[in-house]
Length: 454
Image 1 (tube, helix red, strand yellow):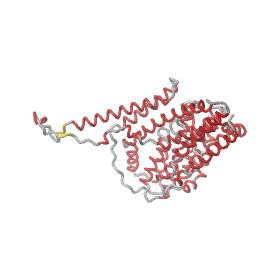
Image 2 (cartoon, rainbow, N blue to C red):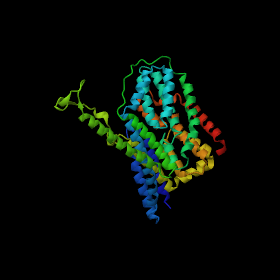
Image 3 (cartoon, rainbow, N blue to C red):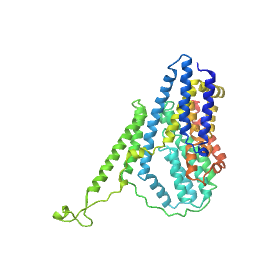
Image 4 (cartoon, rainbow, N blue to C red):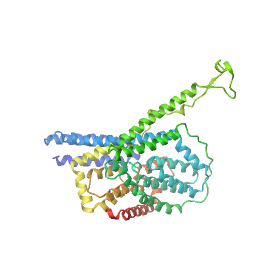
């Protein structure tokens, strides 16, 4: 239907575009820029070729489906990111870091504690935010200990990616699989044990390289800002609402997330009103004047910290817009290749010739070099006939395969920038063999647990 030269040109354009994405750091070019431009060019070429072939509405009908898919994921991620940024604004993460520093744990204990926290925080927040949070802890307690910082950062990246693999909220790829209804919400948690093994195997091997001793840093006192606990409770309630809307009412889970975001906005307004009321309230100091003294100008207004309340729209500005727009470009580019028939050919070669198990394992290995988002988008668009066990396998491998290299996941790339000089591509590469053993072990455990569904 589409002329072959056009199809080949589009494939080549996508290849050049993704090369620019991979070279994001050396080129200092945000990854969303080339893919958003390429998406527009690809669909214009498809529409032009379809018009020449006598199918004027082919591109329009195809692109609307991908726009709807992106719209749901965009709003879901925007709401989740806003909750995370609000928790950061309320100093929850900084307080956690301060609490860990104050415990004065040994370096080896800190290695295990930060890894364990990364593994269990990632399913609720996301692997990128978790890696940055726990990386900040390591940098705070490991000053002057470059060897500890290097191995500790590798441990955090592996743990954050592994923890994100067994929850629909832990990674964009798991969210996509859940929203596409390939795997039910509660089925994801059958990946808990394989994910745990994926982290524990390399962590046990790397812990032997942690030097003895304790950190020599002084803890800081951090007080949570007003509303911190309320934000956490709202987030948990929002997650529960999203799950209920999807599983109980058969509605898109994004409706639950956006409802929760609306409640968060109302909560922010409540904190603002409360802070203003406190500012206008009289402050009588140590003693309460009697009679008319209280209203005769002797009272002072209570000073209020501008951080007492939060402006939800300011927090919305801090969302990862580059990531959200990159996601748009990827979905639209991969969708264009699917419309051209390239994904059908890829599916025949991989899932047809190699079989689903080997193909899903290779998806994870490829995600160490190519971002797991376009890989998962491609798999979902191929839509191969697979059992739930196989869909869980590709969810696992796409989630944890990026840990094989520091550039293989958003958590690794972000932490390289945050811990510049301490955590690099080469420091991670020294432990790739251990991460690979964990990768293989997690696949074996999953296949053993799901042996009746393969």
